[in-house]
Length: 346
Image (cartoon, rainbow, N blue to C red; front, side, top):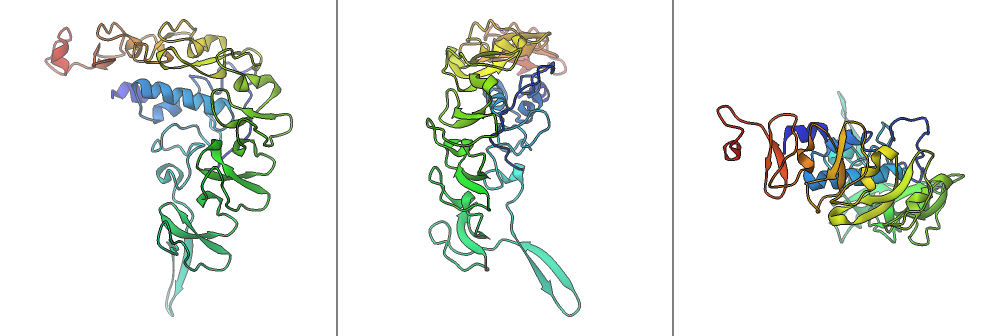
């Protein structure tokens, strides 16, 4: 992975809040430019980076995360320092921090000390039946049998059934229809409802429907029916100034319907032709330079990523664009090497 790719390329759950872009905003809050730092943080490159970008923008546009400093931040991998919408203290403690543990205080005649300990209560995973303090229950969670508050066992239950408990006013259900269970406000149950019925609740003025091309439900506003329209036709509505189309997929496939600005239609064009528009100073092409990559906007001085191997005629900010097997990569010349000899830079 080149340093250029890392630099150029990317915890509370905020669920069910449909994100509508401001008409007056020059840059889409969930577009390529807004989400570029989140993608760079992933450290991914090649096709994986393109897939990360699509996931981040889709989650952002569905209101599950933010690319503009809101909470939770958008993230596509565990370990990027961002506690994303699908991560928690159990699945990704390095990003979200350790799960809550008990605090005990030890007092002696001359001193008092406080330390944080993990209250274990059985043999994981089949015999979590040990004793716990009053008001707590023993559950299998994060690789241990742990004592947790009796009204917070939801996260230890398994989806899609999710039979755990939640604090008053919240409901336990499967996040995005999967195996992870979360508590959500009882007035915001769309994200834990089952597709295709999607009978959950949303904020006033929003409706619950099945996200285009997926098996989970999402809240959407009347001017964002694009997100729940059928792909690849994608005939839904978008906020003023945006257009609805299917996300560019690998090998010419088309994905979920999404809203983009007219200068970002590259992201909804078909690979490998990739005839869509990009912001000024960028070029549209298939990531990896072949039909296996989705369409992507790249800076005009860094088109190596979207050039085709083995010719690799793209540009680099520094170094030379050379073939790296099935894709092209920018390689800096070490001291004494000749840039017109590709074998000299490996």
